[in-house]
Image 1 (spheres, rainbow over the protein chains, first blue to last red):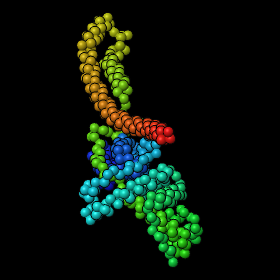
Image 2 (tube, chains in turn brown, cyan):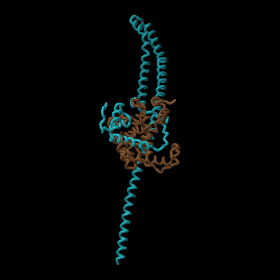
Image 3 (spheres, rainbow over the protein chains, first blue to last red):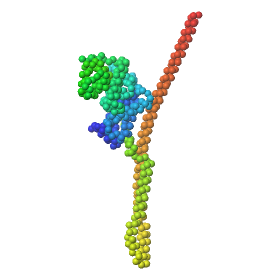
Image 4 (tube, rainbow over the protein chains, first blue to last red):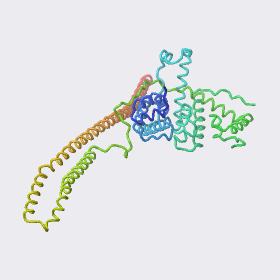
Length: 196
Length: 242
């Protein structure tokens, strides 16, 4: 039987660490993905991910369920990412892809995709990662939370501690900046069709 | 809500793009887009950018974190257990209060036995010398009996309560030590991770510095080579001139 987050949190709070480990299994991928996209480095993302769950576990008695568990977890992760960037005193650097190993890529994805498509996708991934570097921390975080974690404007506003209108502005300006960066890196916007 | 939509309302466009606006607003914007090439192009290009973003995926990583069973969630300070020294002090206070209460009960226990004597004392005014001597003997025997019988249970009670309290103190101290051991383990893990993070930063800085140094050295070598080439050329030209 699959337990909800709330049930697992309640059991964890009463000292059942197995329940918390189930929450980790459920949320470690999204938290890792968030940390990776914000920090841009695999090792850092893994450390932040681990630290997020450790801190969440220790702070569990103080979590009263005012927000969703996932939102609470995302908030901890984002704060840790912010601390991480501040501590290293440098702009986040996205990890450029290393030499592509087609066999490994093929094994990781569905067989219907050709190697050429895989390589192209990998290249595009690197281009997007590089373009994301040109954004401010706030714009990048807003886009990551919206695009990859499906949060609402309100949730992002709560997470970033800013008005809803600011979130929309960050998203709009961030996407516009990204489009310009992608165009500079050879990505061609298809010819726009006039709606009539 | 917005009855009309004006070009340049980027907030409304973003809400439309992410389908996070009221149905009425959505209809208004949709009808505006039909007639406005600028806004429709903007929406299309933003949508195209969103499409590109889907290609960005994090690398596959082995995660599998686990919280060890020995770790306990950190309680807030008002619910957290007392440190060992405070527990020991509390135990001693409890022990002292218990002991003094026990002693007070032991010394107070003679009063109920003294009460039957009072009527006898009350009648002494009319008693003879023999009565008084008998009373004295009886009192002495009773007092001697009290010395031998009464204090014994008091001492026994104190001893048994001592043992209980000592056991409790030992349990509290053991629990406290266990908690401290867990805290220590947790802090050690955190320190190790912080140390590792700092090491990585330091290594990156060293690498960067070495890279800069190599770059400077490379530039100098290149400049020296160019200077040597120029001198060689000059010598060659001057020799040809002769």
